Length: 328
Image 1 (tube, rainbow, N blue to C red):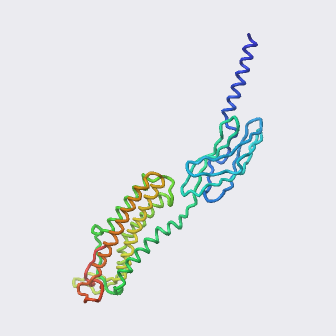
Image 2: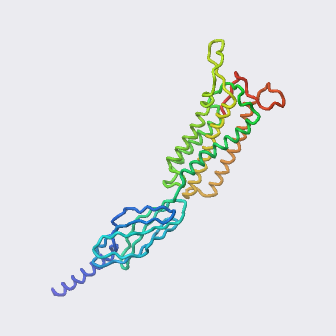
Image 3: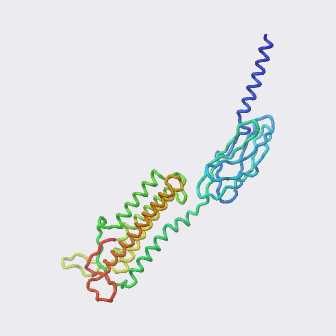
């Protein structure tokens, strides 16, 4: 009886040992904890693997990604028994325009795979994208103001500005846009973005909002003191070119804010949080806002620049030095 029990125990031990071995990955990944590679081009990396088995292990290397694809070279390697070996591999990812996550998988016959977390980061031209977002709205603002000032005497005296921001259509639009951008960046956008980080988008919202708020300072800085009023109150006078510079700053902020919101919608579409059709619809709405804004600015600036006393055929002239004008 004892011999039967002993035999049964030995068989059970052998079966348990075989089952335990089969449930253990063929190797243990020692380092790195996560493999991060760029999507542009092949990147050689070194991985440390430990083989705790009493025999050599031949591994097959593959990759799994949540989006896109990547290949690993070499696709096969042998790790000697009871050793920690460094394995040089090269990850070649596709040129996807978004971040991808996945695993490098090490498999061997008769054992579950060992995995190494993998992050593929696309090459992003942050500087180029930032330059486009900043300077394209600026060039659009300069072009629009230049057309309106083509028949204006830029040295003509100009009256004081009305600093009532509550009456400024452009300021109100930009503040609403900045608020919308802040809400989108704070709670809706994914962690991995296409063009800029969340902090980057928040920075652009702040930049363009400040441009609108600070635009009147451009005009005020160019004013000159003239003869004081009868009651001794200091009087200041600007010029048409200073009004044009202030208008450029205002339009720069408005156009930049709208462009930032358009990019935020694009980020949401890329992360599959908004459908493409809905993003196109939102872009169409923003396009209508831009058209209305340009029409408003043209009419408003012509009204400010038009002088009731200007003779016919003389084009636009600046308002009198004592006549005030409201912000755009």
